[in-house]
Length: 83
Image 1 (cartoon, rainbow, N blue to C red):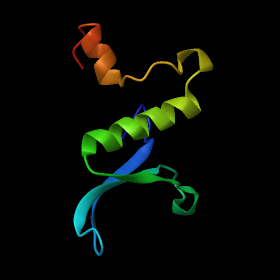
Image 2: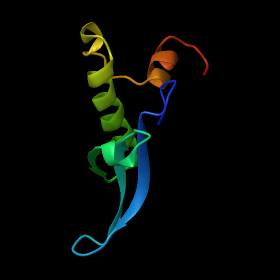
Image 3: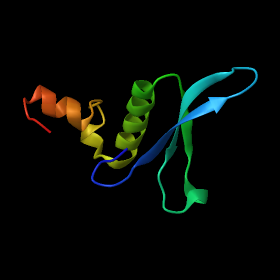
Image 4: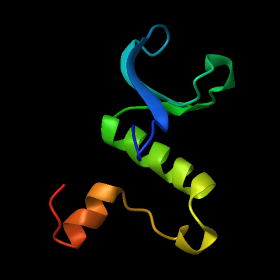
């Protein structure tokens, strides 16, 4: 996941017993793997992306924009801008 730079890694992973299902695992990005932090496991890519983006925005955006929850693509769509 990118916002001018890599902000997270989302992978499709198989979780064995007791769940036996595929989930999306999201971790923060850092060039050094030991500094990456788990954001969570999600049932859909859309949910993983939303939570990941929201988490990143709360950590990196100015406080005045924290109420914004839309992604850059959603902002562009609302403003009728093609990406």
